[in-house]
Amino acid sequence: MWTFDPGAELRGRIAAGADGSIYFITRDGVMHGLNSAGKEVMRRDADGLSPAVLPDGTVVAMSSRSELAAIGPDGATLWRLEIGESAGPLAATDRAIYASAGADLVSVSTSGSLNWRVSVGPVTTAATTPDGVVVGTSRGTVIALASDGAVVWTFEPDGGFSGSVAYADDVVYAGSGGGGVYAIDLRTGNPIWHVNSAHAVTTGPAVAPSGTIFVGSDTIYGVSADGQLRWKDPTLKPGAAGLFALGYDSVFDAATGDVGAVLTGDGSYVWTSRSFGKIATAASSASGMLYVGTSSGRIFAVR
Image (cartoon, rainbow, N blue to C red; front, side, top):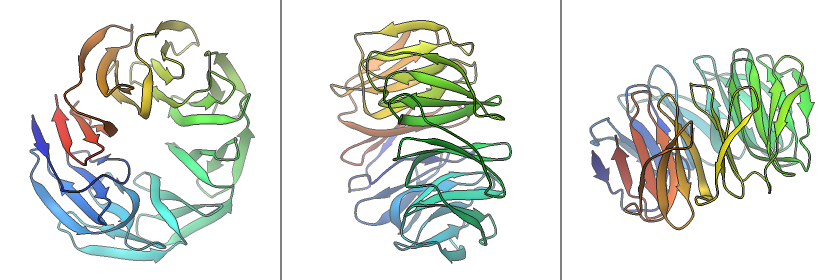
C-alpha cells in the first residue's frame, strides 16, 4: 500500500494504534508516527527501544533513559514520570502501562502516576490480562501479577521460559527452552497442556483470534486451542524478528533467508516474498494491515 523511509535503522518494535497509525523509534533517537496512509504525523526525540499506543491514541515512550512520557495525538507532552533506566513500555491497556526497569516490573497509570513496582527480575516480554499482566523473565520463569502488583503465580517451563508470552480466553501461552509451548490456566498457574517441538522456542507463541497458536522453533508449528498439533512446516524456519498474528486466522512469519510469509491456521500459504530485504520487526492493525520493518529502517504497509 505504501512505504516509508525514516533515514535510520529501527531500534525495536513497531507499535500500532487502533486507527491504523504506527509509531517506532530509530537509532538516531527519533520517534516517528505515521497515519494509516503512511504520512508522517509525529516526529520527536525519544529514548528506549519501542513505544506503546493506548486505546485513546496516546503514545507512551521513554523521553530519556529513565523518564517515561505520554504524548497526545497532537504531539503535546501530557506527563512525565521517572521510573528508572528502561527500554520502554512492554504492554499497555486503558488502565496501566507496564515496563521493565532493571530487575523491577513497573506499573504506571494512564494519568502518569506510579501504581507499583515489584522485583521479578529483568522482563523480556509481557501480555496484559483482564486483571493484570503476565510476564516472561530472563531468569526463565513466567509470572502472573494482579492489577495491584500482587504475584498470583509463577511457572517455570521445562528448560526455562523462552520466546514470548501470549494471553487469550483465560489461558496464558508460553514458550519453553526445553522445546514446545505450554498452555497455562490464568487463575491457577497450572499447565493445561504442552505441545513439544524439536528445539527451544525462539519466536512466539502468537495467538490468532480464531484460537490457533503459532510457535517458532526448529520450524513453524500450528497448534489448536485444545493442544493438538495441527501441522508443522519444515521448509520455513522463523527468523529472529518473530511471528505476528494477522487477521482472524493467519500469521506473518519473518523467516530466515529474508523471506516474509503469511500462513493460515491450517498451514496453507497465502503468500511469500523476498522483496522486503532483512526483516527486523512487524506489527498488524485491527483492520488487517501488516506493517513490516526492515533492518535499514524502511517500513512497508501491506494488505
